Length: 568
Image 1: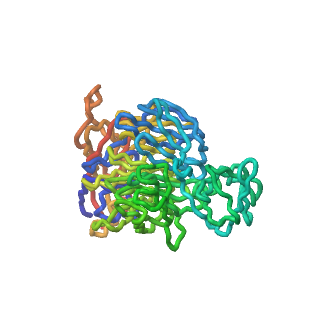
Image 2 (image 1 turned 120 degrees about the horizontal axis):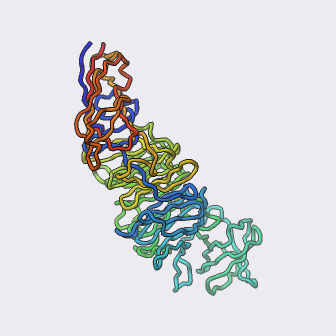
Image 3 (image 1 turned 90 degrees about the vertical axis):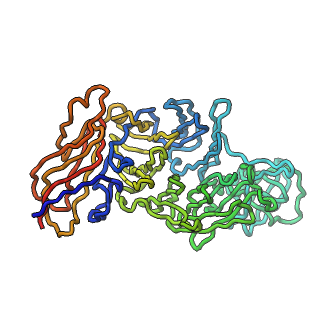
């Protein structure tokens, strides 16, 4: 038998997978629940949850920050958007999206306006007028000189051999095709031909529709082959993704053209007229590769980043003009196409969830600033990532929150300046459904007893939702490497160093702390507490210690030391 003393004063790697238990260079834990790794490497109980409001159903949270002093959290539910400020409901407005649509809803904000896109709905614009929020359909601008609408047009593959005969009728222009082509979804769609814009107002059959024209034109003597269809419509679908980049509004992908990217004119965000290709005019391009590219989301960073179902692309031109579009696929991780999981920016790097929904990736330029890498942030804690449904980052706390399909959250405490990259898990008496960060505060949607609630983390709270206690637990990694081929060990003493704490259990034994710390206004105990135990021999693959509490009191652990003997 040999004696050993093992001290751990840093938990900077958080909860790690069993695959890393034999690695003596890992400063981690076998399990970490409802605790955060603090800057010095210690661990502290998470903040409690403060109740904000009861919600009518499951909701998707979106942050809307108008100014430093004007911040809102949007709780979007079934055909409703509830708008909160300072934990108070300020307005409830009707929205077109059903609850089943919210997983594909994307958005982008510029100043006091937010634009929402969904592949099955017209884009919607949220703005505030005279103190009242309004949701309006996004409208492309109008060209007074040509009487045309400044929307993007193109020729889709299924229309390449289609010609159109034009005939004047009582209620407009009859458009007749040479083959079956029209559907009822073409109604309210636009066509571009003869230098004018036509709006389809009535469907007759697969070869005939009725349209109106925005101006005067001359009827052609022969069937027309030079025509184009609006990129976005009920038939072709609406934009899948959106961002603002270099003062352009950018739409990415649609159901009928999943690899297309459309950029507005500079400073004219409703004008998508490509014109004659001048530097400030609109831009259109398609991602081309050996695999079908479905654009999942767009990110405006130093470059325009385009995340598709097959990989990660970037447009690096500065400034970006129609004549200079250098688009390149850098990595081939891919993103989920069946749910929108908004990428987050952490210290200048883009954090996104991989296509397999099991990796959290970090998209960052290499040292030369030319190529992107997509390193995995969750390799050592891969078991915590499984089917994410929402994600948000709080830069004030330096925490990344990832809501999982099972109702728990994986939380990354990430601070490169002090070498902390620590994953753990948050649980509550119920389930988490959505997360968003607004003005430095983290909001969540929870489900408790079949009801949904809007809540937010608050350091002054020691329970969840007014009265619900939660378990705080950390379990040490097994001692699996000593250089002596150890078979069994015996723990004789466990010492935990506390800071401003009022509760602690070591291996389910309550530590006795000075009674004076429980007086009103008193701070917690700082110092060592120990558990002496003869113990029994155990395999080295077993956890050597566990600290925990369910008490609604502060607990911070700066380090743990174990004293024992081992058997070879």
